[in-house]
Image (tube, rainbow, N blue to C red; front, side):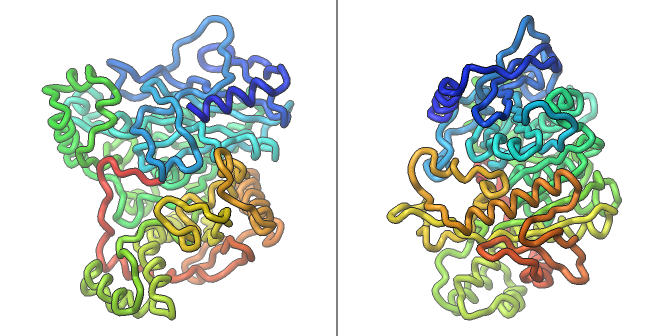
Length: 522
């Protein structure tokens, strides 16, 4: 609610100006002209509300409205559990609703055929919002692109397979409704974005964490063919055996377990339950299912068969991705024991590959590369091997400068490092969002120059299909024979991909445990 109040206040204090009405699917929408000169249309419906009999169905067309729809405020986020203080440390609370299939558009004034950048939020497919200040589209719109944030259903309301749903679907499978929402929003972009000055032939999809996994799934999906020209993934993919799609039978069994948890006797009973009760269910559940229509196999299978949407990809991760299963590591003996417990017979080879002067640093690198590092390295490798379009890679290594006395989550700010999600405000030019409710960061000149470097690379990639930045020029394409990436930090540079060859050790050790159920990722 605080976020919505601040949005309303900002718009109230802005000059009394509206963006001219635009005719889109459903009718006329009128936005607002922001003080920056950017025009914004907030809370534009792209599908019918997925309520009652439309719960757990593919998104349906919007119903036409009379007159003018005033798109001057954010819509509620999709129904989800309340965020914890850790997840809420700079976003604030928002209204939630099952009626949530809306998107936001930001555009410079009086332009045509600009690149379009579509943001897909993360949150473990359990939480997330298209209205978070950290995801604002205004800064990049000022730089000359049309920015779109789309919403999609999350949790069991967005990702549930069930035998009765499979029987009624018409194609013998179910699940992946949140992914269908993303596809429907991208179809809306194709039909309507030219009216906002965007080029439907030059759409770049961008996501982080589960949003990055979504980008990879959209690249895999035949239903998304032709809906985007480029893809950017930040810290997450279905490669590497950790978070890939599961068979339909597995997902349907999980759906039946959720039905039992909720005390329902049938699909009709489930649809009659209050949405917040469904959203709060905790029965273990893998979000993505191989349904044969939207997801046709594992990421490795789809790419090896050449069935992916073959577009340029810009992908990477952060140095200190916050997935650390080992606990505190104080010395080499503790590290060796932790690796033996986790990786078994592969432990000695992994220890030898990552051994160094600092066991804690080695533990962090191992935990990262066993999870997100492997996911992104495999994505780059499979795109380069089985596609014609290039892949570009980065590693974000900047630890944000914290104000004196401020703590971050349960971590010491001196050691949290370049954390999962920490790169987002640099790409999107939304650093000020991190200081929205309290002064947590004291930005330094290095942060300003890094933001300029990263956002310029994203804008160049969206415009031309190759990232380029002021300090580095054009970025090199990935090749497995000499794997290099762009190191993004106080001194950005092109460098060898850290431990690229060693990441293969984790394939031999088996996939990392699958986080299922209601445990979200940022």
